[in-house]
Structures are given as structure tokens and as C-alpha cells.
Amino acid sequence: MTTLRTATELPLHRYPSPIGTVQRHYQLVPSMRGAAQGVVAVPAEADTFLFPADPDGEIADFEALAKVPGVIDPDAALSELGYRVAH
Image (tube, rainbow, N blue to C red; front, top):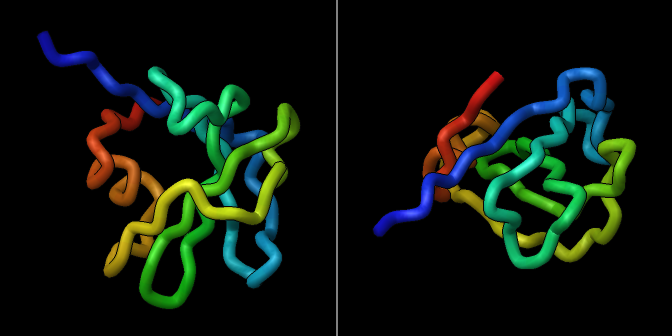
């Protein structure tokens, strides 16, 4: 049986990222590598990076949980990782 993976964005937690793009906070079910508060998706020039989130949607740890090369849309990046994105 395949586990349904869902990602739900918390739009109130959209903030400017440290690199100037808009970072977005998602709750993931199941969580990604123990990131209980979800992930922050940060699109860069050519890739999207996912970091553990704190409860307010800020980056809790700057060690990336995942990098999705060639994708700069956070929803598409999560889809590439097998999550169905809900809004």
C-alpha cells in the first residue's frame, strides 16, 4: 500500500528569504526526515531548496533537507518529491 503524501502551504508564512526570493512554509504528511513543523521551500536561481521550518515558518536549520535541481517553483518541487500539494 502506498502512503499518500500531502503538502499544505501556510500562506500567512510567506516571507522574503535570505537570498531575496519568497520562501513558503508547508506542512508535510508524512514529515520529511523528522521536520515536525514542516518545511520552508526556497526557490533559487535554478533549484529549490527545502529546509526544516520552525512553527512560524522561518528556517529552523540551514542544512537543506532536499534540493530539487532545475525546478524553481516550490509546488512543483514538492510534486517532484512525491507530495500532492493542497492549498
